[in-house]
Image (cartoon, rainbow over all chains, first blue to last red; front, top):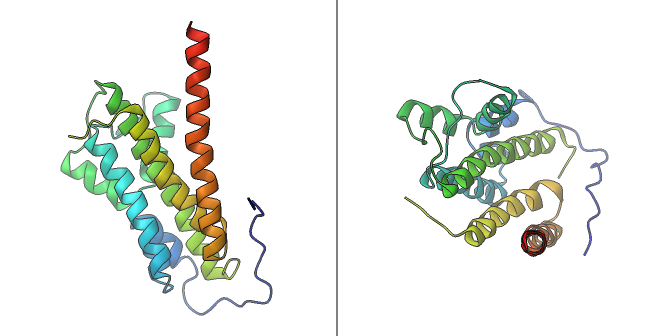
Length: 135
Length: 59
């Protein structure tokens, strides 16, 4: 099984426009950074994976971190913020359990945090596509 | 509400995380699929192995 990392794409020039737009769009809406560059299949797979993970986390009565009491809460908020507008909409709508009451809810909390971190990875990937570091 | 078993939660977590890892860490569709499958097997396999280790430690 090959696990060779990506090689930089040599000689590829980045296009015109705001170079950070795919990064910001990808952070706010999962997959949007790839959609902006015409990577429809990749964007759809990323969006489905990240949104499904976030929604399943909420469905498991996972917790949305809202305030910072200690360092672990700070990390939780940082992870949740990675989901962009999904987190904002969920906070405004009052979704997410407070506090965690079941084991499944603890899984759900992790699903929500990891969905945010995966979204950051996807947004950075969109930025790499935009700058020509990846094809 | 959704109440999966621990193993179902592991499978879902591994599926979604592997999909994102495969797409973001490799260049071509073939290599993306192979790396995603590799990550999925490692996620699920390590969860099963660690579960057995914890069971043996608990005895």
